[in-house]
Structures are given as C-alpha cells and as structure tokens.
Length: 221
Image (cartoon, rainbow, N blue to C red; front, side, top):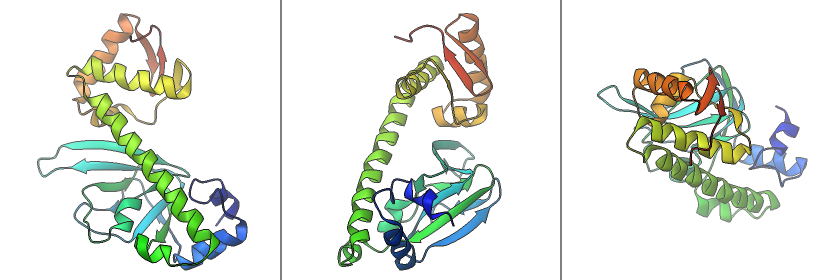
C-alpha cells in the first residue's frame, strides 16, 4: 500500500506518516480488488466500512425493481464512499455501489462517531475533522445533481450539467467522467433521446463533442 498516495487524499492529508500507520491499524484497513461491473455494496445491506478508491473508479447508483437506473455520482481514484453509512451502521444502504472499471478499494472499519471521539490520539481528531469536510463535499455534490435534473427538458439538463462543469474547471473545454449511457442515467433521461438532443445542439453550434470530451461554443446563459 502506497502510504504517500494516502497522504494526498482528503482524509489523510493532514496526518504524518506515523499517524496514517496508526489509523490504518486501528481501523482494520483491508485492500480488495473488484472487476468491472462487480458489486461492492448492495442496496438493503448495512456496512461499518467506508471505501477509498486506490485505482479505477466506482459508481453510486439507484436500481429500482422496475429496472430503472439512476447514477448519483462517480467516485474516482483518491476519493471515498459510504462514509455516512459506515458511521450509521444500523441504517441500510439505499444505493448500489459497483466498480465502473477494474478497481482496488481500501476499506476502513469506522466505529460510531462517539467511539472515535474517545480515542485519545492525534490521528483520530484529524480523521474526524477530515470526515466532516468530506461529508460537506458529498452534500454539495448531491445538491449539484438536483440542480442538473431540475430542468424539465433534456436540453436544459444537459446545459445545466455542462455549465456547472465549465464553472468548476474554469474552462470551456473539458472531459466528463461519464459515457453516453452513464450521462443519461445521471441526468435521468433516455439515452436515445439524449443522443438526439446532443446532435441538435451540435448542429446549432451550442456545443461540440467527441465521446466524453465537450466544448461549450456559446454561453448557455
């Protein structure tokens, strides 16, 4: 395990190497590999573990009994998932988490927040502070998705998503983390209808794109 890699992630960035080693030992760190499409966590289950993506990426999604799929977010290398459920082990997961591509995941068995507070070590305080920041960031991401799916039209949803991505990257040209089906699932629209709308927007010189690379040609506002 690359400790220096961990030191560059949000949860460990304020820790010394010695503190990281202590944290990994105390939280029973375990590394596991998953193949593309393999389920990591299943809706309806509960967990005491949060996951850190060491390589690859994972998708957090809702799959209902009627076969509909809604992507909530994609978790990439160096990012975490399931931290809220790990702190509330009595709560069942409402989402599925699966490997978007071959992935290596580091699992940390997170005790309840109250138990972590009783650990009188420097790493525990830093871990809790970083975990709080991580939760704030996740809430912001969920809020952004609500903003992206609020428009009633497919075009409105596409423009909301691309405009947000442009603001975040400070560029009019960028690569998004979704393929066409994943983007349709994220925006909660039909893939065929999405592809048709993207083609229309390209013909109207609003955007240009190739696969998951996009360029805004005019300001969506």
